[in-house]
Image 1 (cartoon, one colour):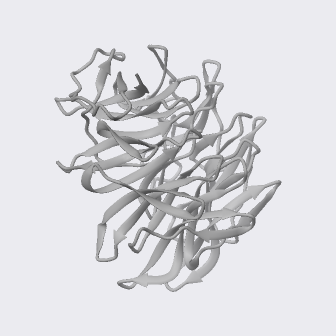
Image 2 (cartoon, helix red, strand yellow; image 1 turned 90 degrees about the vertical axis):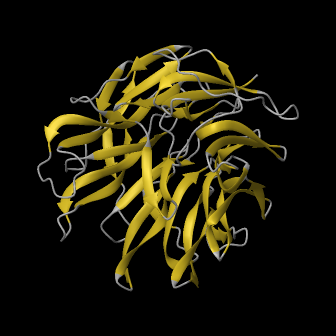
Length: 413
């Protein structure tokens, strides 16, 4: 099961370089891995960013506005819906900043995302591009346009093994500020279904379980002070359930496992320097549980495995919000995973083998990818990791000696 990542500035060291991807290979700096650590090799997949990987080792790569699929040394361009642009990484702008969420590749090699269609927007207010972009499903060598809910744009966030796709789509309506109103959708059997809201106007679906349970966030329609309120939701069997908050105004759900356990972040009723604090949560058995922090004011949960182990990051000190450490939460306890010599780290994924991936600041202030397992954080070198599969293969981005981005696959030797 692939997980999620906080977007960080990245670079690389501490690996053995194995082969090169398409386009040759710029030298990736390497240094010896400590003898006590598991040996890891890195495969250069060419320019760009590796966003997702499935159990077959198929890797989704973004490169210069194109979505590529890599498998066994071969690279395939998935094309577009009209214009020469597509992407397969869903970005959520929430409390944690920009977070990559959802699983954009299935075990059958189906890929979802969004692509420009070639049609111009009917209204350009608050649009990031002149051109419409629609959610797509790529399978059997073809990219399928999943349409919208009546408006111009849509985006697919995740797909499950049944081929059900979730995301959000333009409804064709606008609010009083002439901003398009989007609703969460579920696409299956050739039809896009509007999942509605929690009483307000907007909603987004972020992840889906194999059983078709959908999570995300939705506008409640309630007014809190000078702004509105949005809550995490769980949609199943045609009904959207409000998962509430931890006492504050807002919450977001970012992931769900097959047991129906939901994780994300939620505002508490406490404040820090006048701001509401937000804590990581797990929702299970009908209740939202506060996972707490490592001593600071805020925390966020980014990934969960099937055993209910949760990873993310927490602030360490209420007087130093820039000090954040990766954590793993299990059996009611939050464990600090530490850093690689710097002030901060973030855990973005965990598999059933208890391997945790993330990025951590080094002593030189550079961002390094890491794998944490059995109490040891192994430095994968200067870079950012985005996803891990059950075989322990991880993908992300590294930086060459010439400071260019390379999509990479990390593997045990």
